[in-house]
Image (cartoon, rainbow, N blue to C red; front, side, top):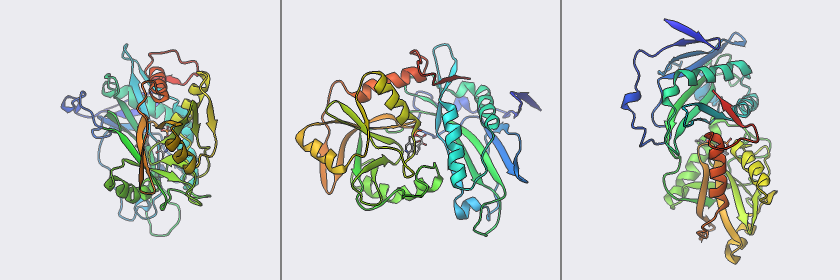
Length: 354
Ligand code: PLP
Ligand code: COI
């Protein structure tokens, strides 16, 4: 039996798995809620999405996702406030970025109502899965991939758009130390770095494993041409505080245009913090670490929220960041999470009620 909400058909799971989940000990993206949204592209058009039980999908071995990597995704979070209302943060920005990514990978773009109505309906159905505990949220993973068949190296003729959700805790479990990369590159001019393409992450895994073996958690990517300028980290954009100024690199076709990054820039500017969006050389950061003007580094992203960086490695030397009492990272993290969780006014109109 199916029902319809917001024009979306819902086929309910026979039983819920929610009682098996320890909401006080949530890892990141480890358990999945009862339902998912599924939408198929065939014969040149997207069919209406449906909410269905979370389940395995069957694909032909010749599906182009396996061979040519046509796949893009998004990362979002839903938050529950004290009244049990559920909120999203700037969801239209995720929708638009998904289509920007799709376009770059020759994947057909999605209609806005399929994404937004589908997402709203999925969250209404799985509302109980949105955690209430501080620091936890329902991580939302919309993704699109080539399900169409064939070994011809050309775009597929069939695609699937799916949204799965996972009640999640913090992305990083301990302190975050980063390695500034001098050899490998995440992206190149004219490439796909600005897209949230699955392959961008696969390409980072090996260099990141090498960094992890040396005791770091993430790589900070530098520009592929000279390796002289800081770009972003594997799963977050990077901010550096030198004296009292917050600096982040400009976005480009090599860097993901992070929604957290642009929100932090607006928030910091509104709070009177000096922000510079400009090229930031590794040598400037190393020099600032040596002369004591480097006060903070932090990553910003949906999964990472704001993650302070305790130190970095560069050319076989380790540099520690000072341990300050009042950090921009802590201040801005509280400001942004208070807005996301409906604990503070939202002068920017970023919150979106489900
Ligand atoms: N950079 C990369 C490579 C990412 O994977 C992410 C995470 O989504 C970000 C930056 C931050 O983007 P956002 O703040 O939109 O989540
Ligand atoms: C996110 O922050 O939502 C991301 O997509 C990063 C991912 C690597 C976990």
